[in-house]
Length: 117
Image (cartoon, rainbow, N blue to C red):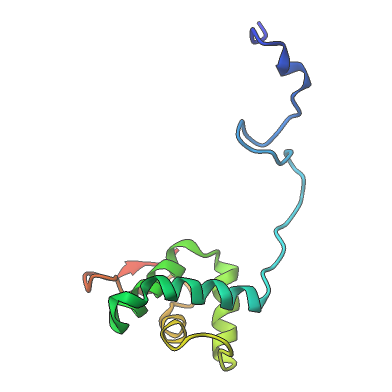
């Protein structure tokens, strides 16, 4: 039995009820430019700056490890390895302590380290 509302007839099939991307669209996300990654990382650094340098570095690394896509993390690490132009000093330190794959990142509060994604 169809739903009571007639709108279901015009609804396009999607990957989920909340998704606006059709199933199997095959679209891949565009890679983020190094300039955009530097801007984003520096914004995160500004957020943690008031906590003091040691906590800020750990907080930045924790945030990037938890919330950035692995491709974005790899790109910012490559940028930092090639000199890190444009990165603020605490952000550069945080990127340098990020694990390359599956390692641990220090927790902000000085507690136990967390596993990266």
